[in-house]
Image (cartoon, rainbow, N blue to C red):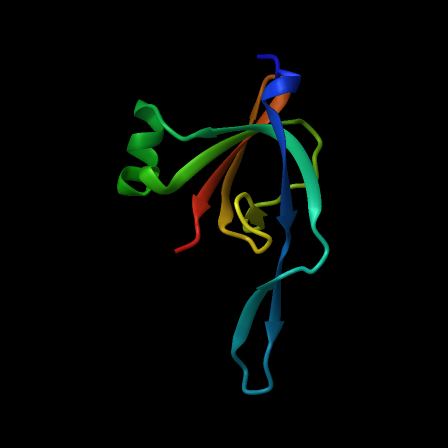
Length: 106
């Protein structure tokens, strides 16, 4: 599969940082430094993804990127806002690129 240049857009990813508070609880926040990644963003769908995610599929997007980009599971994705509004659920390798599943943060 070829990623067409005209269909690509930039999505900023922000890694998740886990901090331990003084009282022993952990808090997860997003990094301040965004990592811009170019790729093809599409609504998630299909029979296999419906079996994997069920009702959550309505709140998911699929992002096709070139292999080797600095994206990790649990990171936040800034798709429509400056703050992360999607979270990376899974990263799958497929041929010469990666398929990143994004779920809306509700």
